[in-house]
Length: 528
Image 1 (cartoon, rainbow, N blue to C red):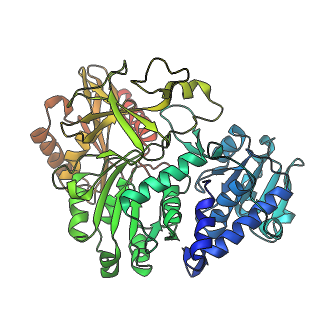
Image 2: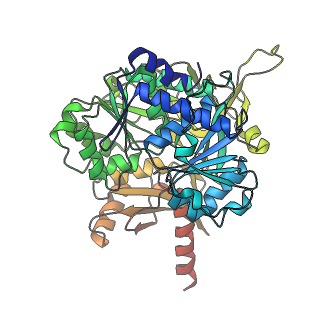
Image 3: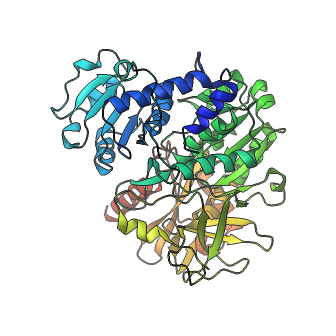
C-alpha cells in the first residue's frame, strides 16, 4: 500500500463519508480522491519525474491535503513547509532538497520573490489565486495557478513501491540548519496503521488537527484518520480558546497537542460539548507535566489520555495505555505496534532495569535518513544492536540521542536529550525533572530549565518562565519548592520571568534560541 492508497481505498468503500472539514467547507472521500487524481495529472503534465520533490508552503486547507497526496500519486515526494517560516528559511529547504515545484499562495509567493533567484532547481511556482500568473518570478521559473494545474482529467497513479520516498519533513536540530528526514511510503502507512490500532480509531472519529503538517505528529493526525475512514478538521488557531471552540463545534473525538498547548488548555474552562465528545487526547513533542496532566483529567473525566513519544526519524515510537496513567503518570509507555524500543549503553549492550541508556528504535517506521547529509545520517542511523553476526547487510535502527530508563515491568521513562542535559558541578541534570517541580507549584503557565555557562559550576541551572503575576514573591516560592524537592546541585541559581517563551515552527519551546538569549543576558550582567 502506498500513502495515497489510504484515501483511494476509502473512496471505494464509503465515498460519501466526510474526509475533511474546514470552517464551513466539507469534502468527502470520493471528492478528495478525485481531487488527488487531478493534482496528479497536473504534475504529470508539468513533467514531474518520479522521486522529484514538490514543496507545499500552505496553511491547513483543502488544497494542501490535495497537494500532498496528489504529489505521491504522481510519483513525486512532497515537502511540507511550515507557513510561519520566513523567506530565508523556506529558501534553505527549497535548495537543500532541490525542490522542482512549489505550491503556495500569491501573498506568500510575493514574499519569497527575493529568495527564489537562489533556488535554481525550482521550475514551477503554483499559486492558489487566479491572478497569480501575473507574478514576477525569475526566468527559470514558470508560474501557473492552482486552477490551471487541476483542470486536467483525473490521471492514473505512477507506479511506485512502498520503499520509495514519499515525503521529506524538516526538523530542527541542536546545531546547524534544519535537516530533512526522508520518509518512505512504508514508513508513513505503517505509522498510520500502528497509531490507529492502539488509539482504537474508527470511521466515526472526528480528529481535530491543530499541529502543523510539517511536524510528523501533525501529519500523522491525517494519515491515522484516513486509514480508517475517519474525518479530519483542518484548523490553524490563534488562541488556545479557539481550539476548545472548534472541538465543541465539530464534536471532535480526538485531539493531539504539544505540552505548551496542553498547559494553556488545562487552565481554561472547556465547553460541555467538547467534554462530552472527546474520546481521547494525546501529547507529543515532550513530556507532559504531571500538574498539567492532573488538571486535564479533572476537566475531561471521561476522556482517555495517551501519553506518547515520537521521533521524526521514526514517526512514532511509544505510548502509555490510559489504564496505566494512575500507576505511572510520568512514563512514556512501551513500543507501539510493529516497533521495538531498546535501551542500550554506548557499546550497544542492553541496559539493566533502572539504568539510564540511549533509546534505539527499530522496525518498519525507521526512516531513510537525512536528505543529502550522509555525515549526520551515519551518526543517527546505525546498525541495530544484537543482530546475528552472519547478516551480510545489517538492519539499520535510529539511535535517538534521548536518554531513557526502563523499569522492571518494561515501562519506559524519559530522562532527557543528550543535547539538552545540563552538567553542573559534575552532575548530569535532566531539565524535565526540574521543570516538573516548577509546574507542580501551579504558579507558572510554562517554563524551561536550561544550563547557562558558569565559571565555577560549568553550567548553572536557570529557569525561564511565564507567570501571570511575576515578581519576587513568586520567585521565592519557586525557589523554595525546588529546595524542598531537589538536591542542592539541581536548584536553579536564577529564575527569569518572560512574557512568553520562544517557539519553534512546530509549537515546541525553542530551547536553543532561549539558551542563546539567556547566555547573552547573563554575559551582559556579568560585564556591567
